[in-house]
Length: 167
Length: 102
Image (cartoon, rainbow over the protein chains, first blue to last red):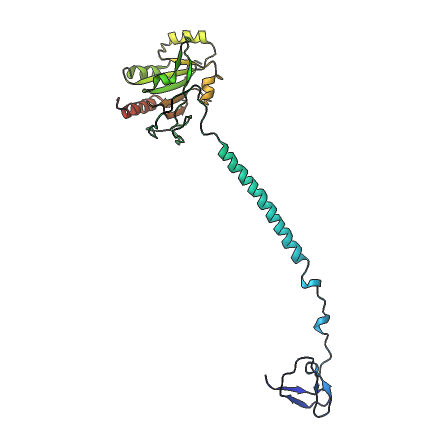
C-alpha cells in the first residue's frame, strides 16, 4: 500500500499519509499537532509481545528429552537384536553335516539322488552321513559267531540293513 | 518269525542283493540258539545290546529300523519301523532294476 489513512485520537481528524507507517512509529496530526502511533489510535496501550513468557532457548524441555530417550532405546535394542541374530546364525553354521563313520570307507563317486518311493525329504549329498542321499558309513564288526566282517564287503550289491532284536 | 525277511532272501537268491542284520539282543549265546531255531540264515552284526556302538553310530532310536543301500553305498531309503513287505520289495526291486540286475 502506498497511502494509508489514520484517525487522530485527539481531534478525530483523518490523517492521510503517503507512506507506510510501521507499527509503533509516531505520526504528527497536521490539524492539532498531536503525536500518536498508528496501531494505538483509539486503543488502550497493549502489552508488547516481547513481554510474553517464553521458555529459555525457545524449546520445551520434553521435546528434547523424549526423543533422546527414544533414540537411546532404539540404539540399545538394535544392538541386542543384532547380537541375538548373529548368535542364531552362528549356531546354524555350527551344525555338523555328517556323522563320523564307524570304520574307514572308500570315498565314492556320486550316486543318483533319489530312490523310488523315497521316504521323507532327501537332505543328502555325496558326503558320508545318515540321510537319504548320503554315502552310508561303513560298519566294521563281528557277526553273532564272532567272525569279523564289514558292510563295505557288500559294495556292488543292494543291501537292506535291518536293525532288529529278538524280543 | 521273520517270514518277510526269509522270503526276501529266498526270492532274490542269485541277484546282487544282501540282507544284513544288526542285532541288539543282550545274550549272545541265547541268540545263537534263536538263529538256528528261527532259520535266520542271513548274517547279523553283534551290536552288544540296545546301547551298542553300531546303533549309536547310525543314530537308531527305534527298533526295527531299516536302511536300504544301493550298489554304490548310498543310502536310498530309511525307515523307522518296518514299512511292510510290499514296500520293501518295491524299493529293492527298483534298485536292482536301476543297476540292470532285475
